[in-house]
Length: 47
Length: 177
Image (tube, rainbow over all chains, first blue to last red):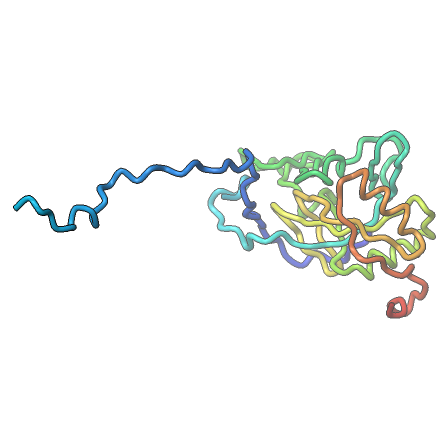
């Protein structure tokens, strides 16, 4: 294959996207452990 | 980092794109053989449909040199592709040059064109490239040969680029589709 005269030399280092190693898993909803602030702010009738 | 030149920053992180032709067989598994290569020898392009493959050199070329080359040898060790060697993966810069090659060879039905990506050390020539690493990005069917190209592409797990017309004139490009 005739590709003509040499012109220059270059160095190419392609950045590849990492291959998918596992299938995506659906995450289970995590219960919110923080106190319900609205309930705490409600006036109490004890006092 | 560049394997053979750890002190050098890459010139690009995008592979160079080139075009070339191969002879193919699709009898006991599809395989591509470079034009001019020995008919039954293992092709350096084997596996290039699945990922990057590295060029080999029968004249002392290596992927990297750990010591200064001995210039007194007939074929001093060099990094592939060597400036004073003919090793490396070959590709043309433009598709029309690869098309022209198919015409010059009076290609038969066992010749296919493809788009390739090149990386590592690459020597740019006026019409094409010689590269240390290559992979096949797509096959390019020649009009009238689409069915064969499609079967070959399916066997190799490669996409197909749009079909092109067979090169018919040495003076100019083929007529526009």
